Image: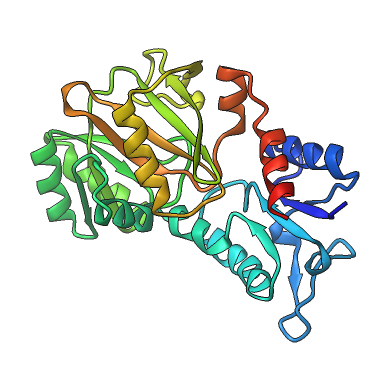
Length: 290
């Protein structure tokens, strides 16, 4: 049987689930944390706790770190080096890097004709204020974040300039989107190997503007429209990921709107809402590819 390493976080629910699923099918388990790798560019060896992971038959990337940040891009470069020397890695590290940065992901989506909320990108506080005044209510988003961490609603009014200044002091470039009424839920449309797998909804409990589980949201099964599936498929096709989740809102009469394409996809939402064991399905997929 092939020896497959899982790149993730020790103790992380989805990372452990995937590593266990691989072990059940191959009798081999190695959960690799990227911040503990030492890459030797001369020999091509990549050491993790005494194991040269460059000798493995393949790697599956579940997480590159506990928090999204530019540091993750540098960690993924280590894996890109291994892939360019012939290692099979799921998903391609370069493709993950293209979605990890929110701005890079957005530029690709909009250039590909994917419908998204009205968005302004600027480092200029005066231009940011103009955007807030146009949108009335705006969501300011860090370029690297998950589960709405660091996001803030800034509304037109006398307090807006100070809030904008505080945000740019903390995050630099301002990624600003018009706040939409999404009816208290958004969708995770899941794809594996480019093929549709399932959809789950994140339903807010009314206590927050966002639907994330950090803010009280719950996962539920959901059947999306054909239009939603077509747009989500077109969005994920732009990136070539082996496993991903497209965040979509079916926004009333305006049609489906895409927020982002996930770098790693969410196993817990799939299992909670649909009962599917995404870790086992992904392990089977990788074994077939190898």
